[in-house]
Length: 197
Image 1 (cartoon, rainbow, N blue to C red):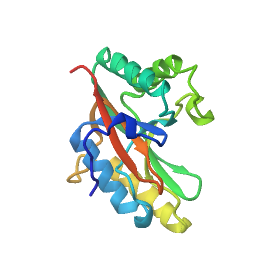
Image 2: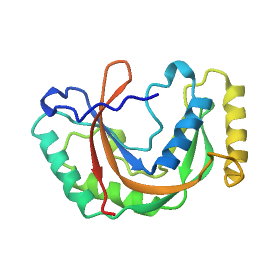
Image 3: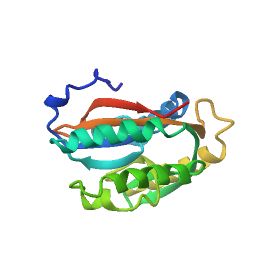
Image 4: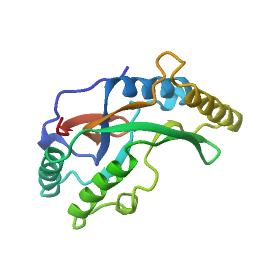
């Protein structure tokens, strides 16, 4: 469903950069399937993801520093267990699943990057602490009843995760993915930075 391009040529990057968590395939498939089920179809432009930074600068010299820092930090970070926590409402139009297992490691990892990038031109959103890392399953739904139904169904599915085929709550955080934000809301894959095994 989603196309992953070859590593983008760095000089061709123009849009802001999005940094997301790279997770093990079974958990990624589960998140993608949930989004396909619940996300408004006309807004489903990118795969399921947990965003660490929403709009990193892509111009030089910022881009070189960001790439160097990502290489350095990921090479010193071991892959870690991660698990889905609880469903929660994002206002009346969205539903997400927060992180249970692995939250402290994830928050500490992002804090290290944010400290390294304190001199970068970060957005207010990216300067904030990552207080509730999550996967957005539904967003910008115009029908409040659909959003409520999604929330209730997700709660039940998470409670019965071991019994439902394809519904997994556990996986591994394996690294981070850097994406270029394109006009219209699509993303172009730039690079994967893997954690140590």
